[in-house]
Length: 318
Length: 318
View 1 (cartoon, each protein chain N blue to C red):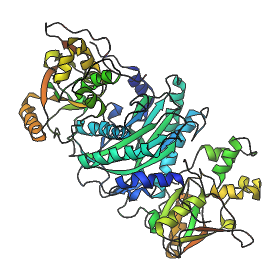
View 2 (view 1 turned 180 degrees about the horizontal axis):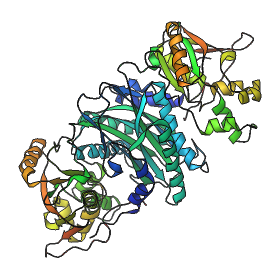
View 3 (view 1 turned 120 degrees about the vertical axis):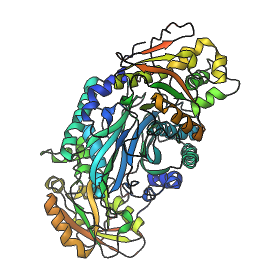
């Protein structure tokens, strides 16, 4: 027989081959093959996104692609890693229009350029369910310099990048529960800004990105580091639109997900190094509290000095 | 607030933490961090599996986990790679019973032991659709030794490992269309045997695994290498149960998917090296044809010397 190009491979050629970089073998092989940067450690992370759970079925497909890439880049940023490449799986209903793939790939293409990363490999399949996506991102870091969740010490300051809560409020905007005259909140919800380029290696004693809510995520560092944490709610940086939403939304800001800012433990002796690194990267950083000895807990102090009562620290899928 | 362990993280702790190996940070971090083996190239591959497409919703979950891992290990085997680790994403309906996760993780555990690989990281999410899984596997290989699909030369022999067609016939058994008194065909469909350990690096000029059907997959090598291929249908190794199914099933064997055997281009000067490597790995290998100059096509010669007519070379998802 002659060897026709089945539709699955034509789809890959049409939309995804343009994204392929060194080591990808043009997506025409079983696997990517690449030489890791000598003398560096690898950083690997993956996330799944499902229509109806992580994004809305009628979200613009370019934004879906960009968000999928960026949530993973945010995990690399939390380890101080330089992005190297990524692999994706794309499971779509059979009636998905070609324009969806074109838009999705175009979003990936835009962010590949922005973050200096290329596609290494992937898999496309059909599904009888909603669009289901996964992405594995790979980066590299100097040996021993990737901060762990378990590395915080009592007395370390608790720092965050950027502003907290815009993602949660943006979701409220998308659901019609909050006004957003400037469009800032919705934009922040739809398109995370991973803090790639903030050189926290050797500076942060612990680090992670805020994806499931500040309080819950800080709880992870507390548990992993066997420490308690105090944060000052008034020190948590809020964007102007988040402030404008008013105090009723403060708990949503502290517990909602989708911030994709970095949450860092910084020893006092490293504070000036952090400020220099932040300035070099053009990223705002703010100290919001400190770790102390004690059973893992996160105490949130309000503007009257009393603790805020927070029933649920963040988002869980189950 | 105190920092409770949300259900999602409890699920990970209960079922998946036991699988975590070096570099995984016990699945309690945003990313895995590991030093790549010095002086080796990385080999990376990923596959998605969706209930109702790649497996049946009531398939035993341990077999689902093992198949997910093994289809990816098969891609590493096709590049002659030594497995290093893997990441998974698991998207499940909210009513998925705990026993499903326990069985799924136990299947992964069994095969981790069998193949010397550990879990590096992952993501669990809910889905309103069917169970959707993805796995990214990472291996390593000596620099420049991973065979490409594009590396075959005219005159190279076409070789396969093991037997071809059992997966396709096993699917027919699962659908009640074929008898399987020994259970061999169904077992082969349910549980691929990735040819990890067959040291093809430096021996094969091209290689891939047979996952979408021998004829279609050979067409990929032809297109990538700009060659035509002749295969002798009578030389294609069939298992005893596949032979017993009779000649009506031969085309299904040559075009059905799920073999997970290796399809290799072997220069004549490397044939004895391949035989030695195969003997060392305990894997049967057979020469089924050769590449020749010409436009990409796969000619399948039957036992009367005439070409078999094959309408569709293999499986496409779209």
